[in-house]
Image 1 (cartoon, rainbow, N blue to C red):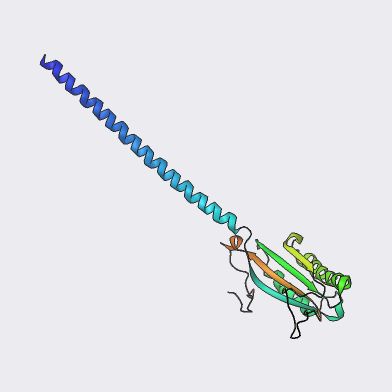
Image 2 (image 1 turned 30 degrees about the horizontal axis):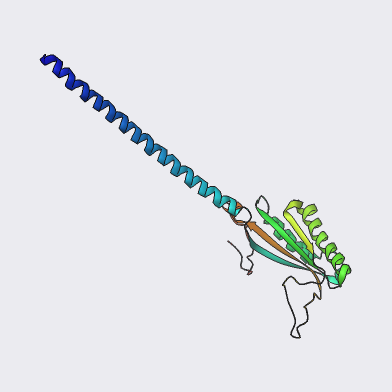
Length: 194
């Protein structure tokens, strides 16, 4: 009989050890699952940040291209400015070029004139520098100013007096991460970026 009583004690102890090992393994699995869930949560937060930044652009540079007599002919100086802009974009991604053209004529004549000016800038950037068309967005403003409710000292709406094209280089904040800024591109306040 003494041998039997030892077996009874050994069986409950081995069952308790096995249960303890199973509980320990379950705890380790729960810890691993918790770490996986935390990793997934962090990844989802990063994806949310990426998605929110997809449509976030900041202004990097501005140019003002004047046109004499409203003719859509680019001057040597205007071409030089556009050449410099395009040279800084070589190999870059995540940018758009906003083009707004102005002409002093009123109504549809002003809009048509400003449209021709914008097209001359776009054509030059495409043909001379292979800037993709999808990167350029143009609007013909005619004689309207871009600031809403702009009035002169007498309270009359301010109108454009000369023909010109305003160009804004906009850079996507996500695309800019991990890339260096275009060398020599001036910021909107005119200071050159390193």
